[in-house]
Image (tube, rainbow, N blue to C red; front, side):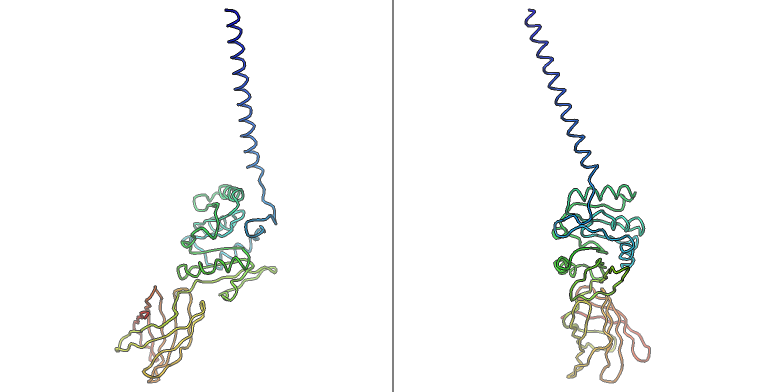
Length: 289
C-alpha cells in the first residue's frame, strides 16, 4: 500500500511539473509574440513587394489631399499605405472616410495601430492587401506614392473609375496622361488628375428647333477635339473641354450662329444648357450612336 502511495505521489508530482513547464512555455511564447508586435519598427528604405518604403512628408500629404479638394463627403483610398499617414490625415484633418491598402502584414498592423493611436479608427483603417488584387473603385479620391511602371499598370483600372474621381500621385506621373495640376515643394512634386468620362465617338444632339446634328469627338484622356456634321459640311469644334463628367464645346452653324454647349456626361447620354449668340438659353441632350 505504501509503495502505491509513493507511486501516486510521484505521478502527481510529474504531472504538476509537466503542467508548469507547459504553462511557462506558453507564457514565454505569448511574451515573445507580444514583444515582436510591440517592437516592430519600419525602416526607411526597407524593401516591399514592388517598391521600397520612403514616407511622404506631412506637408506633401496635406497638399495632395488639398489638390483633390478632399472633404468629409469623400472616401479616400491610399494605395501602398505604409505607416498609414495619408489615411490618418484624410480622416483627422479633412473628416473623410479613408482606407489604406498595405501589402506587408506587419506594416499593415503597425499602420492600423497608428490609426487607433490617432483616434480616427471610426473613420480610417489600414488593411493588408495587394493593390492589384483589391477593388478600390468605390473611392472618390485615390492617393499613391509608387513607381512609374506601377502607375502605368494601375492606369487602365483608374480610367474605368467613376468620371470625376480624383487621383493624386507623389513624385511620379502617368506617362502620357497629362496631369491636370502639378504642385511642387522643396524639389518634391505631386500630380493631380480627374478621371474623364468616355466621350470618344459620334453623338446625336437634340435641342429646340428640331435640329439633330451629329457631333464626333476624338479623345485622348481629358483632351478632346472633333467636328459637327452640318448637312454636307463638317464644322470644327471650338473651346472643347472635358473635366470628369463635365463637357463643353462650341460650334458655329450654317447661319453663322455661335452655339455654346455646357453639360454633363452620364454613360451614353449627355444633357445640359445651350447658349446662342443672342443670349437665349435652352436645354440640350445627346445620345451616343
